[in-house]
Picture 1 (cartoon, each protein chain N blue to C red):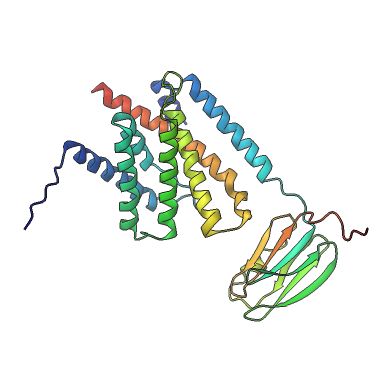
Picture 2: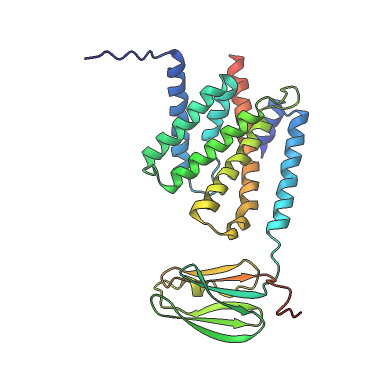
Length: 171
Length: 131
């Protein structure tokens, strides 16, 4: 028998805790009725933004991807179109954060980053929908609704995150 | 609203660049709404069967068409610029309940009978060209 040599660091514990909160928020959001089908606030992204700003980007990527996989397994949508939509949204917003993370913190706060990431999330989902799920140009008719919702929820999530970071730094 | 105001006041983290991004975002919303929600009047009707174009008709006529789908006959009425399904063998009749459509890029789909119609804008500038 070989002994496992995985060292569990404090960092892993932190990732696990934050992912657990993110998954819980996703589940709450899933059972929350939405006025417009398809429009969701994405409150789990508060945790991911928080992780990126409080810790670092690598940890944010971990939390984000763990959230996508674990939530889909818990809801039974693993490898279904819903899962791929969620995954592509997460990957695109992470990619946009990787690209834009070097914006000067003097002029740009996490609000900019959150707005850019929420827009990238919509873009990623729309690319998957257009290429695979509904290959018809008619879906672009819905795009303004999703851009507006991305704007509102991107802003609200960013404000909540900055409040959280503030509360946490005071301690 | 009060909550958002409170958070905005207490965070004080909205910086110059953020207003720039917010403005860009608002501009994007306005532009996308303008471009994507201004549908021109349709000119032609395309009828699809199993995702293949079956026929194309001009919308400027009064005519009733019968199409054989996979389950039976579907009736489509074209009436001077607008079009609707008037009868269909499908169980739920969503296609009929959708009513008249008249704008370019609008569609009605009947999945059970595998018939869909889609309005297109100005398709070609000329009927025929001679040289």
